[in-house]
Every structure is written in structure tokens, then in C-alpha cells.
Length: 215
Length: 272
Image (tube, rainbow over all chains, first blue to last red; front, side, top):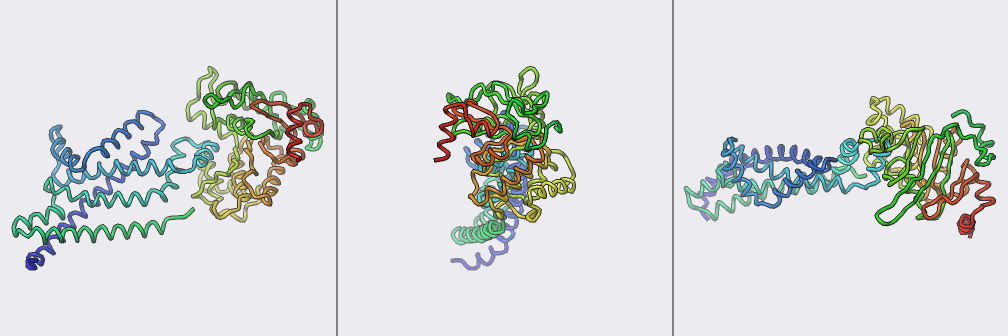
């Protein structure tokens, strides 16, 4: 153990952790937004919309996150879309999370008792109103646990953004290693930083679950 | 609607004498329904007058519930026609299926009360009843709630407006469900075995509400196994078996002197 490197790394990795948080918060925000929209799309009455959403989710689930990150970073500039590393990273993580969140939303809403839908139809609600006013508010209870799992995956996945040089926790550590060559100490520290962050998220998730309304 | 004589007279009248208005409120004409290969009912015709209470009885699997669900297009019938006040339900004049907007506009003219209540689990009793007026009829939140309060009064649930369905007994839930239907001011209400999921001691509070509605001349079609209710409240009893209407008439006729052997056997079976 090289304690001097560890002492030096503590604040640097702290900055890296903040950068990870910044990427993840942005990705969670956009991923949720797009995921919820896609989730409603998955329950659309229009077959074409359902099919498009299904194809998207299938692609996201069927390809590695790292490849998706490279696709966004290297392929999009070819068609004229230019990002810096940070926004490329946020975009890739958001697009990935949206696919999974869509699936969580869809299965959560489809698991609501069919009688609820029929009751809503019987008072003349349209499909859109059934989804919005009956299925969506009841599905929250079931959506939150898998949703927080997804957010934890997203945080873990953000480590892969180091591959496109986004400045975040893993990348910050790699820079220290490149200078001081202490891979064991630094990766151990990186692991501990992630572990602390994810433990916090897991605790938050359990807290939320307890606070959810019971019907 | 007011052309009917008083309730007792109506009960005493035979089916043919029942003062059906010039055109009935609900007409079911040669309706067919099958699920895949299985025929649920075929060529069922039924007319319901304004203010009439029709009770559908028959063994399970006879097609009563599916018939009821076809009337407001919760299930799509495979053939035949349904008319409400002369207007075709579910299809336009050329027989084409209606758009979603048109169908939902027709559906709100029917109330539907489910066997398992199906109250919205996330909403209070009040908001369950107000949901339709607010979301479907476009009333303001306050106006919808005011209407919901009135409807809950009618089913004697004014004490429980803020409770969630899970905090209510089955009988209370079903009364809220009836209020939810009433709040839409439907032209008729369809009841699908409204007391079958209730503990015996809770059946009467629901039947009492339905009695009040019948007395107030709400048009109702009721699928039930409560023969005493059918006897006392129905203007007309319709016996279905194996996807067909076997016999219909006043309660006195159907229960007292059933013409058909199948009706006799069904009624005997109930008494043993």
C-alpha cells in the first residue's frame, strides 16, 4: 500500500465522483423523461407506435452499453451531430436507461388488474385517459423498486464513459494511475467510492418503497 | 319515462301488458357472440323499456354476463345489433366500427356495475365517483366532487367519502361503484352479479340501493342469482340457458308457472 498516493487521490477522486454524479443526474433526468414517454408509447393503440418502441427497447437490451456509448460518440458526428464527451456520455446513458425504464413502465402498467381498465371504460374513459388516470398512478407502487435498480445500473454503467474520456470517477482514477502507477490502490479506492454512492442509492430506494402508498 | 304506472301496478302486469313505450330504450337484436370456436350465445333478442327493471337469470355459463358486457361493448359482439333510444351502439349506420371517441361517448350512456366492484384502488370513494364527471364529462374538480357527493348520498355512503376502497367492506365498495355509475347520469345501468362477491350479511345493503333505484324508475338490466330480489323488484324476468333466452315474463309467471321444462329444472335446482 502506497499511502502517499492514497492521500493524494482522495480529493481527486472526490472531484471525479462529483463528475460522475453530474453525468448520472443528467442521464437519469433525460432517461426518465424519454423512458416514461416510451412507456406510454408501448401501450399506444397505434400498432406502428408500439412496434417502433418495441424495436427500440429490443435494440437497447440486445447490445452492450459500451457499444452504445461508442455508437453515440463516433457514429453520430458522421451524420452531422456533434457532442463533447460529456454530452455524448449523457446521451448514451439516457438512451440506454430510457429503453429499460420504458420496459419497467410497460410491465408495471400492464400488471394492473384488468377490472380497473374495464371500470374506466365503463364510465366512458378513452384509452389515453385510462393509461394516464388509472394505470399510471397505480403502477408507481410496482415501478419504483425495479426503477431504482435501473438507476443503480446506470451509475455503474457510467464507469464505461471513461472509454470516451468523459471526466468521471473511473477516468479520474485512471489518470492518477497513469502518473503514479498505483493501480491496485486506486482501483480499490474507485470501487469504494462507487460502493458508497450505490449504497446510498439502495438505501434511498428502500426508504422510498416504505413511503409508497399501500392500496 | 313517466308513462309507466306505479311500481306495484307494473309488477302486477304481465309481460305483454307491460306498458312498453312506443320505442323501447334498449333493443338487443339477434345478437351473436363467440370466443374462438365456442359459441357464447346466438341470436339473442331483448327489449327493455324506459324505467324497466329486467333481471337475467340462468345457470352459470349460460351467457348472461357476456350478453351484459356486449350491450355496452366491453365485449364486441360478433353479429346482430344493439340500439339505445334508437341509436346503433358500437357501429355507424353503414355497420362500420365506431372510432374510439364515438364509442366512449356512447359507453358513458350506460352504467356498469361489476361483480368485483373494480373501484379505482388509488382513489378515495369520492374521487372514484368524481373521476367520470371530471375526466369524461369535463366538469370542474369542484363540480365533479359535488355531483359525486350527491351520488354517494343516494347509496348512503356519505359517511365514507374519503376512504380508499381497501378501507371499505365489499358492500360499501359496491355501493360506491353504483354511485360511480349514477354520477355519469346514465340512461340505463347494467349490473353484472353485483352481490355474488359479497359476504351474505352484506348482500342486502346493496340490494336495498338497487330497490331504491328501481323504485325511482332507473332502467336496469340485472344479472343475479338473488331470486328474492328478482321476485320482488323485477318487472320482467328473463331466463337464459346455453346461450339463448328460454323464457321471459313477469316474476309471477316465470317463478310461479314456468312454461319451459328447462326453467322448471333450473328453479327446482335452486330450491334444493
